[in-house]
Length: 506
Image (tube, rainbow, N blue to C red; front, side, top):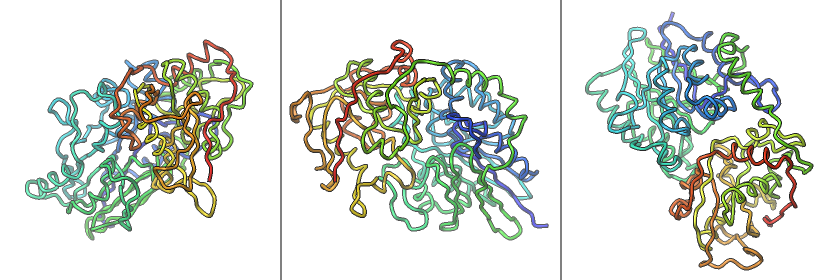
């Protein structure tokens, strides 16, 4: 029988444990309970099980726990311990609730963190590398996280932290390993994705440094296995002698990499989490899940308006009134002249009877409001960048490819209330915004406004540097989910005159 080392890797599970959708409780092939069954079927004495980050944000259970029981050990931490992970890496979303939440998770995990390029007060989160002996071979592993986190997170979440280049850290680490340890195999676990197509080398996004997977394949020689994440895309292949993988999100896929030590062959596979869910995993955190489900079904208010999203593409093209509502709440709470919201992927909107389930199904991120002071010139620049979301293909308006590949990015298309404007898609990028008015008057470059946006956008997320540089008027610590829920609880009924202020034309 051939000697074999097996690596099993999850990534971007985002706190999903149970095998159903929170919006309608329908069964789905995802969640750590299903993943545990798959891992148990594959694991043996020569196996390492690794998580590649983004576990503390995403699911309603994560949200409920960190808002209602933030001082307790999280359900996902308990489940990961029960699953017996050997090592973990951290992802960018693991910083979303601040350092105290991140450290409570890491300190209560049985598996050590091996993130080497995140430094806190001079101390790395993980060691430079770790060494394991398996099947008579010496395996070296090291972890990296995208260094782009300061562009997204508010400073108070990452105070005292430095985020080093993934490529430069990898170069130094591999060189050190070759000279000092001389391992048989080197494994890099990287919470980041590919800035260029790993097969063709064609750029797939703005080259900002958020993703450096292609650069790792091209510039760092000696990595045998590169486990990536962050983009939620299924990738598998080999380039320059390095085997690479990336799995889908929400524990829907497992990367299985077999290293045959007598031949040197490395065989990667991506396996779907389509096995029965492990009952023990579900029972372990069932009390927390039951509390979460009761919270999700908490009645908040009603509406007679059509605020349910049936067609996401149309909802963006015509600016669905759920966006109008979100922006109305933002302007009312913050007092800003303007407010902007995006329609997130798979957002549900509200039915007649509104519950917390509707809100978390519509607003899926733990964003908080930030008010920026801008002028008319910056407003136009901001709108022009948003207008790049659209393109013309086969004589019809459709979504530009860069917003669909390598992953859908509807969260980078903001719709703004408080102004009226037209996007003429056939015009060249940078000159698509027409008829921009505020209170019926044409917007001039020197006019001043306050704009309420998410903390993600305020930090420049989505490639909006002018917004990041604009003065911050005020930050609000409560999340949008909390603010929306409180508004509905106070007002009981959502009723307003529909606003059709954005016109997308050919």
